[in-house]
Image 1: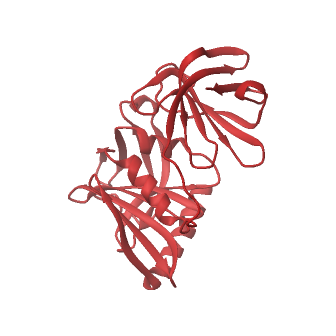
Image 2: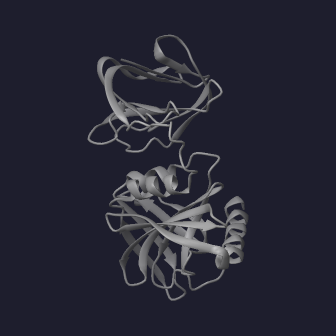
Length: 279
């Protein structure tokens, strides 16, 4: 129900603001086009699109409240009502999930079928959209079930550009470094069981964006350890955590919970897990 009501509010807002919005090209890369939307001189949202064929493509929208992952396929927007869409990534058809997806209009008035996600919580679907190779969807066209696969080439940069596009202009004094990978010691303990324990040579991915976010046992590019984890500080001295939970799983989708606090030796711990990283 949350997805439904949020998406209805988003659709209504898009319709009422359509006349007042000014659209400006923000970036183009890997076939994706990112557009910035302004109202009265203020950025209200940004949208990314990738056209993959006639009536086919991918869509991503970001504003301060919500993110939308969307797609277009034959008859995908034929119904003005929500429809059930099966979605999975790469070869994980057995792990597909069914979502209620709304028709979402972009700044041109074209309607995509979209999954609306609030920005106040992490979404595994968005992580997969950024890092997987292929997105698959299946839905009822009214004349039978259609299935389509969309390549996600360049989706990571498209999402990053879209989010950056929607942010307030940075202050001149703020300089952010690029993400960095260092090598050191790392450890992952979940429910008392040790899954990672490396005294040296463990790749530690640092966001370097001021958030303090880091990942252990992966460089997020060429290497994913059998188990890896993410820690995301919230700015209050606490953090949330996630891990991949299964050896070989390529996304940190399993939550380790909130309430992590920094202890000795670069270790963050809560009642569920301990994640350590040190140079």
